[in-house]
Length: 188
Image (cartoon, rainbow, N blue to C red; front, side, top):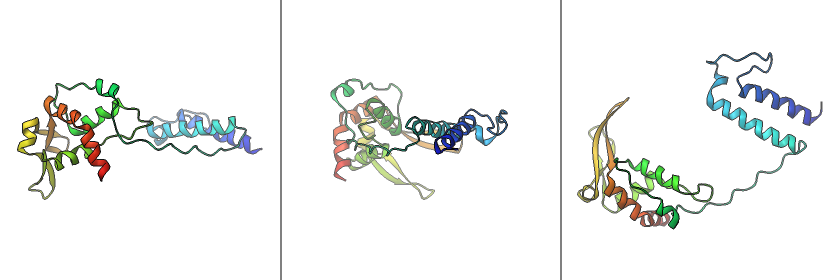
């Protein structure tokens, strides 16, 4: 058996596993079997595609191209024009996810909730507050409340917690100051 035939044979096993079929006897693998886990299945499909590329290349592996470095987060004028304010209050994580949905992630680094929070802390809109349980949390200062940052008690599967939320005015404030937020991150 040649190397290329071995690769094709291995690929056939991976393909069957990805599709929930036992490659040894061609029977369906039970639904609750670990092999049918979605994450594993995606991994099998990924490996299968790599093996297909090697087979298409005659069994020769090529080096993976070096990724071009991405630029720091920034919004073009066109991306800025797409920004819309949510009527519902958002968390800083939701705001960062929304901003990241506007950019080309292949060429631009994401903005994180921490980046936004750090700027809000540095600018005096959030502060660190020691909690009775010994942990610290970020809460709005009076300046933060003035621009629309507020807290709300919520319930989760782990119990009650305090969410820091941003109303329409606070969201607009963050979007208006995005260049300053990024500048602070780049300084550090």
